[in-house]
Length: 276
Length: 260
Image (cartoon, rainbow over all chains, first blue to last red; front, side, top):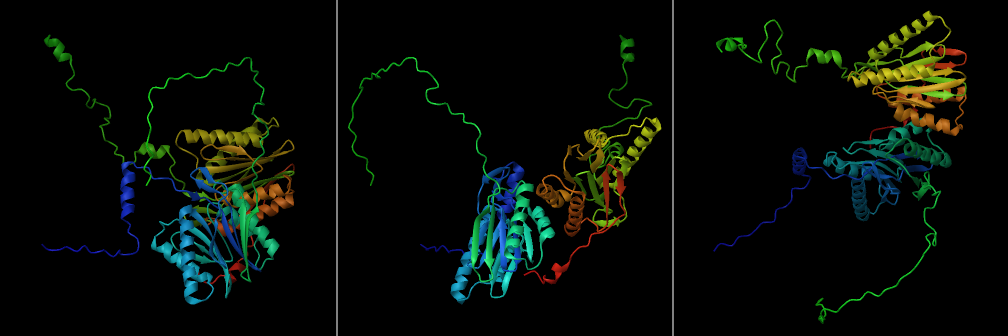
């Protein structure tokens, strides 16, 4: 009798697009794809005199419903690098966490603080490999040995290195605000106000963005200030009326108390359950 | 009985002598029937981009650039998209330029008809807006829209008027209006200016906001042009100014090197 040895197949690596053709085929047959939770969003970043400021709104949407009124869109990448994420919430969360983890390993390996360009390279190479199917649009900002840097990264893997960037559904409103107010080397209070105003323009003019403004300031000394919330722009309204009836509203006219009579039909003794 | 048989026609459901016969499948769905082409506008050809409108105390400002785009080509660079209706009303349109020219001709004829009546009455801005709404909605209901976003502005009876009508008949009045890309880029800026000034903008402030918005649109709208017309209407009448340009600041280019 010949013995058979089953070989473990080494996975090819990279991404197989078989499921995409399968999904397209199923959708043609009438399958309804599950709704993704998106962060229809306003995220912004700006380089100022003292470093880089990242700003974001806090609304997460599931189609037309607000799934989370106060979600956090500014993700940790490294002690000196943070990243705002727009697009599919799961994609931005998992992608930033993965790159953050790999960067920690790299820090152990090299013994050096992370550079923003490294995070940028890792993110864009990952997103390009997935050809836009990982729907993550990111604003990456940080300070390293070469100064303050700000990048915008698109879902297909292209990056731009600029002094001010906006992403998400509210990006046009925010960019209009930046174009009106941006000056090179702004001072800290003025810069914080401009970033807050840009995110607020998105919050109030775009339906996919809302609630509060979060800010993250990474200073030239690599000190990070994570201000969440920086500005509570939308307070929940105070209810004007109370519809609860006061106790005693309904007058009790009479009260009758009767015991419920029941007959014992059978009695059994059950041994303890075997929960081992 | 033999006579009755002879009375029946030789064939049924076929061509009738002397008449055109529409056989089934005459017009396949691939070939557009001539009646279709005459009856529906399916796409605009020469288009104008955003139009901005902003109310201030004492009047209204409207602005539009002078570009007629042919798809992605900047084909006609000296096109006027703003028109004076009468001494109290101005009108501007984004979208198909041919449809705007049609509207312009119709309104100009209406104004002439009014003057001919010689009774001292003329159309109020509200009336023009109303007429525009009815016209556009009627055309949309016939599946043959005038492919425009029209902005109507005026000053009548001591009050400013600013209204917008869409190609599908969505009509409303507001303190600030913007069509096309202006809705995404300029509207947030105009709304903020109104809010920061307690809903009471002066002419200088409103003018400044409009000019800033036109600059931002030139930066960020890929179908815009750096030449625009501004029209102001106040109690003193209508003034459509000569075309002017924004002064864009490209200094940010000095800081940008590469993409990573």
